[in-house]
Amino acid sequence: MLNALSSPLAQFDSKALDLDCAAAAREIEDAIQRIVAHDLRRQGVVLGVSGGIDSSVCATLAVRALGPERVLCILMPEKENSPKSTRLGTLLCEHLGVTPVMETITGPLEALGCYERRDNAIRRLFPEFGPGWKQKIGLAGNLLDADRVNYFTLTVESPDGERQTSRMPVDVYLDVVAATNLKQRIRKTVEYTHADRLNYAVLGTPNRLEYELGFFVRGGDGLADLKPIAHLYKSQVYQMAAHLGLPAEIQAQSPSTDTYTLPQSQEEFYYALPYDKLDLALCAYGRGASEEEAAEALGLTVPQILRVYKDITAKRRTSARILRNAHLVQPVSVGDAA
Image 1 (tube, rainbow, N blue to C red):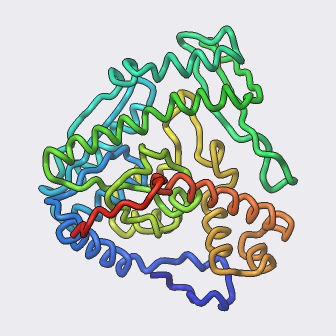
Image 2 (spheres, helix red, strand yellow):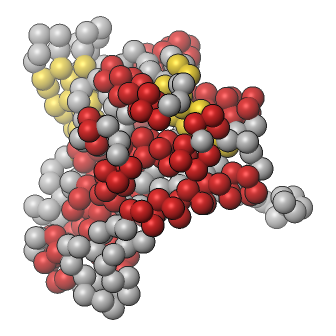
């Protein structure tokens, strides 16, 4: 549904991601109707909403496809996420005429040791870290400046506002990420609990950047029965939000992880490029555009594009690995699922 020429041999430029939103919305809505009723044989859909652009667009398309009475939107706040997420999620539901379900997940996260496990790992780097402190993880360096080895840094902020940043040893990084991934996995457990009781399907909200480049948690936000916007680039999701007439405050939201207690963009945590540039780079990569064409479209140099392409290749391998089904020792036939 791109307005730009789709042939991989066509000249690539900055208009490559212009979207015919009306046609794309019809296609997605028709697919939701067909897949939910005929392929999945479910009565409706469940999804978690946060006021972010992706879940807001997905919820809107689902309501247009199925009606508000067959779409269950769940707000799942916890003690560390921004109150703005709950407010914007509520605003979205009011806009759509949907009555949301509120499921506070702080208790389950505390019971599973999410916060304690993470804080214990952080104290291996910053022994003084404790109540009232804030934290976030970030990528080091600038992808465009020079070839670099990817590594993560941990930034902490004391109650009086003093910040410290240190490179994360691999074991600390893995422990912190494993603990915080519980947030995504608990939310998905809540979604499937409601889906089971209603005979609904779980609708996932990743856009193409997240799906193709592995920005999701296996068994968490990567798990769903239907992912209706996984073929849309992030900038196209914003175009769709405008076309659908979502509230202006939701359209103005910048992509954020809303996982750590210090403000953190998706670029800072994972992508290392603004989403609009990475969208174009991924599109150019997929269409086989030359490095020169891609560089001109993005306003970058050829060496910078080559670094971006190298990063895309590595992240696509990550995505393929975490999307892969479980390995079996021998094939097992489960019959006709239909």
